[in-house]
Image (cartoon, rainbow, N blue to C red; front, side, top):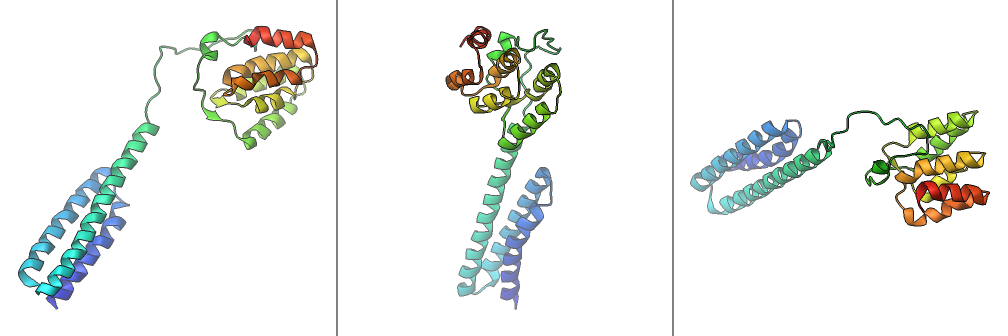
Amino acid sequence: MQTKSLLSMALLAGLASSAAIASHSRHSQMDLLDDIRAETSILEEMIETSAPRRIERRLKKQLRRVDGAINELESEMESSNRRRRRHTRPHRDDGFSGMIVVEDLADVPDSLSSHDDFGLMTSEQDLNRMISALKAEAFSDGRLSALQTMIPNRTFTVAQVKRLVDTFTFGDDKVSAASMLFPQVEDKENWFEVYSVLDFDSDREALRRKTGI
């Protein structure tokens, strides 16, 4: 009877460890792991003094499995904590705390255009929503203003830029939209493809002057 109780306790220790740890904070999780280790040590001592040889080997094998599970849980907790620290890492403070006012929507400062990290890549779903919002604007000025509010913290491919630029009717608006998007493009080696959406050589030349490409 005592041997069966010891085996049940060993099994319950392994089952309880994962269930209980999931519902605790990191600090209390570590304390709980220490408590479980202490309990398994007590069980091992009881096995050595009370259990028959054949049962002792079986129980110790089970306890080793429990100890292995505890080690895996502790390793996973440390990995999860490292991932959480990376996601919550504060942004680098470069001393800028104001607002940039751009008189011409296409005149993006060089300090921004050279920045490589503008955020998440724009998905197809996001792109379709942006195009719908732009088309809902009746006038080109409103459409350019709307585009300017959409692009912060996003990156675009050249193919996406072409679709956005194509929502504009007039050549100068297309040039303004394309040059506004240029700093956010992640595959600038394909930028030459954007010129295909411009109808006139004068517009292409104007875009080259603004982007340098």
